[in-house]
Image 1 (tube, rainbow, N blue to C red):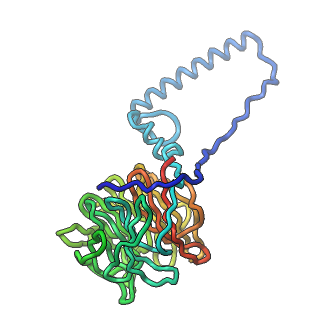
Image 2 (cartoon, one colour):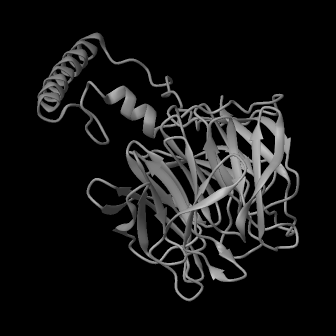
Length: 371
């Protein structure tokens, strides 16, 4: 799949600053010992150093390293430290801003050849919309309409073709899967049950639809959809989940936060489509829901979101290491926002719309790049 770069004029840069610590020098006011005692002391120090070096060499043979922390194989030590430490987490900068035809929150967003499609969502009056908006280098423009006005749906591209999953509307939760063309959408399948509040990501030839809400109960399913083969339940979440941030990295589906019951969650989960296993790999710094997820440079990025309260939006961008679930701050949004749509475009991420703490719905497309 090819996707057109969306960057516009550069905006202010956001940097992460590593923590530093100063170690005080030892006092030099004590008078030096006699020469004979100094020679004995040096000899003792040399013997101790030799013993430590020998123990370290034996430890390296047995566990691949020496010193504090986890042992890491020497061939991967540098990359492993870079991935989980401050050097591995990207620092993001806002590289472009575009204006949508109208404000929107909770759009379903997918990368396509030529740019990004933003589909449906809620407008400034919190009514469902059927708008299909194409965002590319020339700007953002309406190109068609969905068959239904829907919000809280998910979208994903499978081999360059965009698909739209579920959503909520006037008739309740939709179970429809739409194949989205340049200016229209056609029915391509059905979810096992109608669901809004879903997330989605693509691994291989299939999209994986995470959690959701039937308008009666929240779901704990992960549904796989493969064009031509229909939809099936592929995995089970530890608990029912809505509004989670979702992205695919390294053949896994990464899931962060979301709402279970009425409470925002902190778990970072990894789903392996090959085995059907879901496991927790980490914990967010705080409970988070209604955030946007995307992948960039092998990291799982989580943009904005909020806590359990509707007016608790956050501006931070988190970078999550998929190997160990560690989360670090990678930048900041221009303002605290939840309910954005996000799509990965190779070297950058496009964020669409969103809602701020005052309830204002926004009409901007923000493009972020790694610095």
